[in-house]
Amino acid sequence: MSNQNKQFALLQSSQQSLTDKQIAELPILSFLKNRQPIKVKAPLTVENNDFEIEIINTKVVQNSFVVYEIRIKKGNLFWIFQTRYSLLESLSSKLSKNLKSLLPKFPEKRLFGNLDNDFIQKREKQLDSYLKELFKLGRSENTVREFVRQSQKAAFVINDPSAVKLFNLDA
Image 1 (cartoon, rainbow, N blue to C red):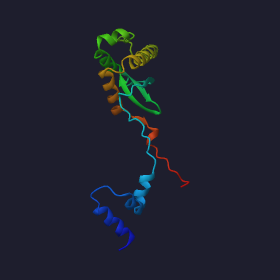
Image 2: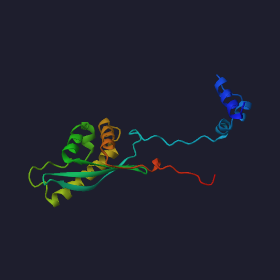
Image 3: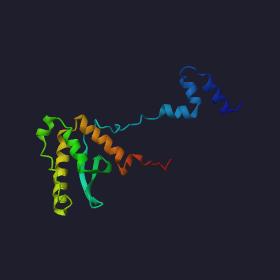
Image 4: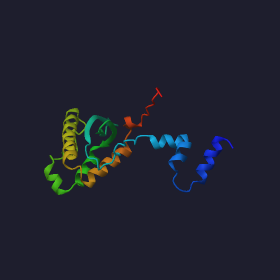
């Protein structure tokens, strides 16, 4: 019987944990036994609350409404998504009264002249400061957590450096 077949038979026959001698006969398992534990980074969850948010761009779409490009960042990971004022207004309306009292006033709705460049820039700054305060003060609120989850789903750019696999070529 070849050495590989012996190792395979040993693996098949062991219903319980292998002894140190048996592990020593199996090169892969002996390697795994002697390896150092791998430090695993904490998984990204919305419960890890150190997110940063920023409006990075605005676009007028079909000369009828404005879209805001928002970047949410956590460490080296970030994602970018687009949203409209009305969706941010909806987010604001769902916040608790207690949190709303701590936040700056949500930028007002404007029926006419909302595509004016000066107005767009002013609203962008107001929304940006509003969202930054919201993420600072309201990060434990369920509505904010859901907003982060939905923004991840809606992202059109995701940069996740941990997804890059590094290889040790010196082995």
